[in-house]
Image (cartoon, rainbow, N blue to C red):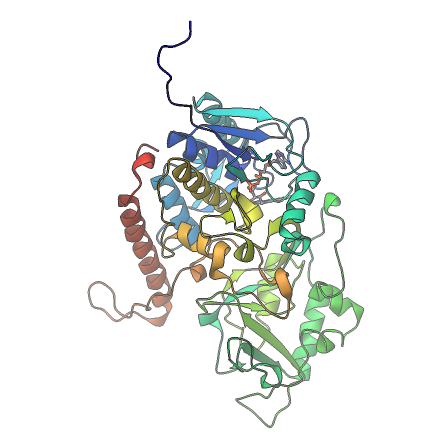
Length: 478
Ligand SMILES: Cc1cc2nc3c(=O)[nH]c(=O)nc-3n(C[C@H](O)[C@H](O)[C@H](O)COP(=O)(O)OP(=O)(O)OC[C@H]3O[C@@H](n4cnc5c(N)ncnc54)[C@H](O)[C@@H]3O)c2cc1C
């Protein structure tokens, strides 16, 4: 019998494409806020070159979520925030921990089976297996694309058609990024080549590190002898001119780097104006805060340990602290600072939101964190609520800010200047380095760095709590 009274129409679902770390977390957050979700995962009918199982939230390589130290490590702060925000990924990781010292490592099968079981038993989540081989249909008025670094080619092509192919990369080519405070400015100096002014009006935009001939030769020897990482079979070798790893440039000739990214022309050493450097390494500001600088043209496949050792041979970088080391991988990701708004929506088509590694964050934890916030944004929108992005002083806010605007675009390198990033304290707005401990004792220099990290962590904790006290009603039970 037909009902006497019409009930209100059921709420339309949010469609989430990709049941990895980000998509699973986004689904959980949105459903816990009372919004129905359809989660589309192509495995097992179609798989990627790295996944091995049909399970949601599969860890494709290491089983580590990295440091769980929330007082002095940025990823530990992110763990703490995700736990506070009811993350399914962190809850499942905590439940399936294996011993790993200060790190949070998991039994990978137990972990992904736990995520999958929670998703499958949620009354508001439906999982549909099958590839979404093009843009989401027009009648999906809210969709989150969380298809990861190995997005299926058909969908990647469709996204590229929407964003312009130059705004979608298929490989990252990452140059190391250094914490600005760790550069020795008694050796390095600020200057742009030929004192050219950029659009920001500064003729001193680059940090320059001078090398004598002896230092250059030793550096080339070290590059040639260093251990490299191989590309995986499915990655191919994506070298194209203009983006060669530095060790490959060195292999092509001992002078190649000196005529490429290390050319010494148009620059005068501010500390020794009469001495002409044989080569110069340049670093360019990487984020709007000015706390991070990348080494220009130093994309590399050197092993991480080798990178720290060899790049510290550069005068001025002998005590460099790296926010991230270089790399080159198969990785589908957007030029997000240009394409996405502050709530992760595609500016050109706001029904589409992106989450996870495809937005330009990197790592399991970061991908899940961006999924978490994307799920909340989409749910709030569906419920007609305004949800402010978390403050940039929190780990999740700092990561979001990097993706949606914190990175500053390089005019000379085009869209590829935005490179994927793990969370790190360099993404947080700076804080004055504490000089005294709580008892008023003057801190020795070596302890100030740790004290600064503790202060950043304490500020993040306080600011996340304040944000959570705001208009978060539908998420209270998450
Ligand atoms: C080879 C490799 C090794 C890595 N090793 C590490 C590591 O050791 N530690 C680390 O922290 N990070 C590592 N990463 C990065 C890691 O993959 C990401 O950090 C994380 O998995 C990204 O989460 P995500 O949800 O964005 O993507 P994923 O976890 O990859 O999830 C994306 C999901 O989307 C599905 N999908 C893709 N296209 C479609 C489509 N068209 N329709 C439907 N479903 C689709 C995929 O099957 C997949 O399940 C590695 C990446 C690769 C490629």
